[in-house]
Image (cartoon, rainbow, N blue to C red; front, side):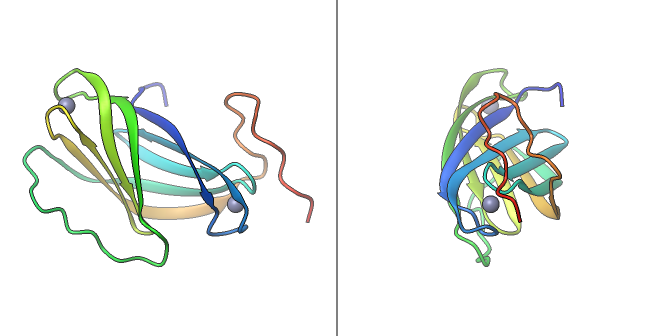
Length: 130
Ligand SMILES: [Zn+2]
Ligand SMILES: [Zn+2]
């Protein structure tokens, strides 16, 4: 993933391991990921569509909480780096540029447990032994 779009983290209870830990959130045009920094559980979301003039986004009720997060990102539509509104639920992941309203919709694709945690900044702790 060389394209830089969204990279942030959200401190909440992990749906899998139950730890309150940073959930690392990454998104590029081709994919979005949510990774638990405690257990390494990774959820992959793939693009569904992109749109500019969405009004009234319907939010499916999922098994998990809906996270509403603000994160800075580079919008390829208006070429401005600025705040994006992220909405992440069990089955969907959306990002919306606050400057121009350009919206990426992703849907849940698969989940896996990483063998070793992704270590981007050297501060992700090792998973507990089984
Ligand atoms: Zn976890
Ligand atoms: Zn934009």
